[in-house]
Amino acid sequence: MSTVVFLGGGRITSAMLAGLRLGKTGHRLVVHDRNPGKLRDLKKRYEVAVESDLKSAVKQADLLIVAVRPSSVRELLRMVGQDNRTLLAVSLAAGVPLRVLSKVAGSHMQWARAMPSPVCRSGHGLTALTFPRTLPRAHQKRVRDFFASFGQVVEIPESKFDAFTVTYSCSHGFHALATLARAAQESGLDGNTALLASAHALADGIIAWRDGKHSLDALLEEATTPGGIAEATVTAMDAAGYGRVVRQGVAAGLRRARANASK
Ligand SMILES: NC(=O)c1ccc[n+]([C@@H]2O[C@H](COP(=O)([O-])OP(=O)(O)OC[C@H]3O[C@@H](n4cnc5c(N)ncnc54)[C@H](OP(=O)(O)O)[C@@H]3O)[C@@H](O)[C@H]2O)c1
Image 1 (spheres, rainbow, N blue to C red):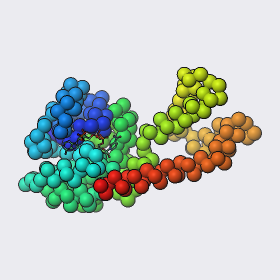
Image 2 (image 1 turned 180 degrees about the vertical axis):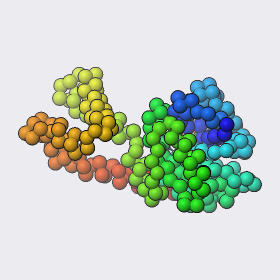
Image 3 (image 1 turned 90 degrees about the vertical axis):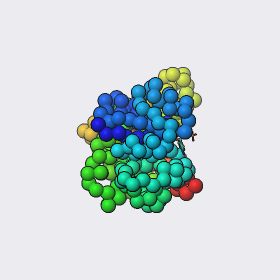
């Protein structure tokens, strides 16, 4: 049994632990965080081992998961210091590149980056991974297998990581749901029915695409009869700048990813 150590016991660690427990992981799980209250809570909820001493936590790791905010990564890695064994580490920190991680941590750590989402809690999420070319294949497989144990995995070049991070946020679904439900309510539906109808419209449509039987174009064509209500709605949304607004949001997210990483 190998030991996976999480540095940072916040939101994403909590979601990953839930997904790992759901998948009945065979790994021993250890969490380090500077807040004793968070450690107590994680221990109770997910039956993980907790370690309040950073160096003792790192010493136990066969695989290290760095799950602190981007602005805390450098400080944390400096506190970890050097060790005389090579350690495989995965950073979840948005926007912090592999070259920065290697430079700050030193040569005893070999890095990969991963971008999961809190929906991995259900065991159905998606995680993007990126590896440096120099990372041995056996290490790549260990990282891939770990993340695949609680959802789907895609490998992308590091240059695409920020774009993936901005795109792959469940906030898009919640935001679209809230916006559609608000418009439905303004059109006369009561709050509950507006939310229910909007949620089914978004979720059922996306599940139909995910089944993989039809392309997105085919599904969109089927749902928008020429001269019909859906066609009028979609056309008016596009004319009002729906595509432009979404592109502007994505561009703002990219700018924020770069700014946060440089702090
Ligand atoms: N949340 C997501 O949906 C998500 C998805 C993918 C990737 N990520 C990435 O995952 C990382 C963590 O995100 P999060 O949302 O889980 O953040 P979070 O909830 O703030 O959790 C981070 C935890 O690490 C602790 N911490 C910070 N510096 C530390 C240090 N030097 N020693 C020990 N503990 C320390 C924090 O304590 P304090 O509260 O005292 O600062 C906090 O408990 C980020 O880099 C983010 O980009 C997040």
